[in-house]
Image (cartoon, rainbow, N blue to C red; front, top):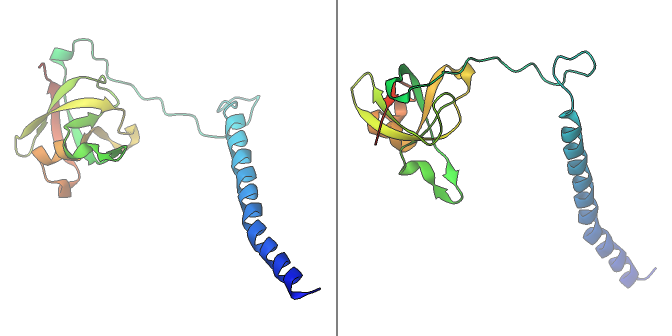
Length: 161
C-alpha cells in the first residue's frame, strides 16, 4: 500500500471512531428509556409482579378547610434555584410546602427573633422524611434569618392580601 492509502485509512478510522461511540451511546440511552418505561408497569408489593421499588410512605396531609384559621409551627429551610437563566429565588419571596395549597400567600415568622415575611407557595416540598414544614426561597429566608443558619423554627399562618 502506498502512503496516500495508509493516511486515508487512518483518517477514516479517526473520523468514524467517534461516530461508533455516539451510536453506541444512543443505543444505550434508548435501552435505558425503554427499561424505565417498562418498569413503571410494575406495582410495588404485589404478588403478581416484582417489587422494583419500596412501597411509598403513607403520610397524613394537613386538612385545611378554613385557611384563615390555620396556623402551625415547624422547621423551615431555604432553597435556591434558577428558572431558565434567571436566578428566581434571589428576589422573590416564594416557598414550597407539601401541605399548604399552591398559589396562596402565607405569613412565616421566625420564632427566635420575631421577624416575618409573606411568601407565595408555588412549589411542592419539602419531603416528609426531612421533618421540615416549609422550604423558603433564599430571598424569603434572608428576610427573617441568616442563610448560614440553614434551618430555623417558624410559625406559619394565613395571610390575606
